Image (cartoon, rainbow, N blue to C red; front, side):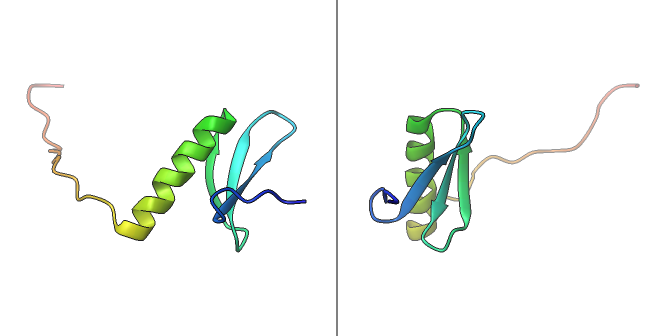
Amino acid sequence: MIEWIDDAFRLEETKYGIWHSFDKEGKGLITALHEDDCVRATRFYLKGLQEGFDDAIVSYEGKVFGKL
């Protein structure tokens, strides 16, 4: 029997102790070392998909100063 979490996703543990979450269509979502982390990260990810992710304010520059 498959146990659905929040009626939105399920978890599977590999033989190596790694946890994977899958949506109802079987698409892989999150991989984590611990079950609780996998549940937390999957909830965060699905909420972001549903409500939209905040735009990042951080910007990066690719300039290198000085002599290499």
